[in-house]
Length: 546
Image (cartoon, rainbow, N blue to C red):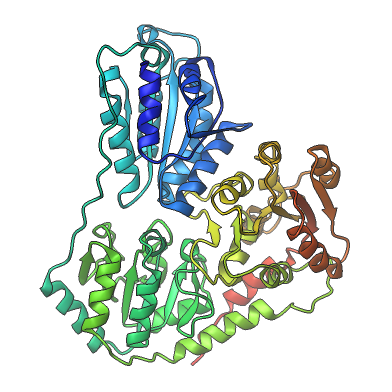
């Protein structure tokens, strides 16, 4: 058996379904070993697209998505997607080839030290120096990537190692379950006391709740104590927007309605919250709020986030036990008025005929067209803020937003992974025209795989979110505008369907038809981003209701 064959057997042992990537001379032995493997190799058109597919696969399944590249430029092309997975806490394994290391001491064709380059953007990475360590390296990489807080791991294997014939019989290591920990009795009692003595508690749910599959337990805890809950951008759906105790999404770096609730709260119970999702400096500016930290790992050190009690361990168990220890009718009814304000803003343009379309109208129609379990993937841009603030999520992992690394270009390749994971659901990418063209080459990958999904392009021929901030700070726009291709012809050149929306009334019927089409549909939707300025003015004058 070759070392490359052992490498692939170890990946199979970890339950790997897909490897997203590109071939190169230095990973041909790995590719050959995949030829007869049950793992499906998904050939992509760019390594960044491969990394984003692995990223979204990891986020949707909780299992590490795997991406593959060759050395040098292939490996550096993975960099952004790997960093995104690591900061968004999505489990991912990046595998890169490398030249014969006998050249490593000198200037050499396409050689750079990828292990050191990837170290700051991964939880752990290593070079396979000897074929005998392959089972240990792969088991360790998957274990570290998949334990909390989840993230990226990287393995480099050179062509000189991959092609070796093994001198002894080696097998993959046993996949062991991850250890779980439970807080002390005193910690539970302290948390229960804080909740009992609070007047205006609020729950802040982070993406960790979804990763822990503890959404039902979170809802039970909220219901038992009548405590309203908000979520971060990446935790949309942790509590259904239909739930009577769900308030809103938190995350704007400006005063929003939900911030009024946090201002009045005397206790914040964070569950699966990560400060990378939204800095506590925004919702606890004085650092004076009582805090209960419920998570799989201890709290990060931060001047604005110093928990009074930490309940660290398996989140389902913690929430279940805390629910049994409590039962206080808190009913912070002020939150209900905030909830109505957000809902009213989402529905404000439901009957609008304005064209170019209001972002709120587009999102309202998308919500009506999709089922509770259907998935939207938001790219990064101005549309992301509208989706995060207003779009109601009814189930976990149905609104995928990158908000740790916040990377443009993720939505379209993310659709490939989402459709592979959930072939029975409708999948929609919402992207700006800037983000769309960053990885639009992956339309060919999706088409070749026979996938069907819808891409909605918020089209305004500029980097709208950056322009919004530029105008706020400097008074006028500079260096933000560009031109676009004909998106309809562009879609058709891939064998897909292109639709250009010419009036607000056309959008909903076209979207419904697109969602029933067994093909990729690209919708070019002109958007009126004057709403950005209106939002800025509104939030700038926001006074919390009494």
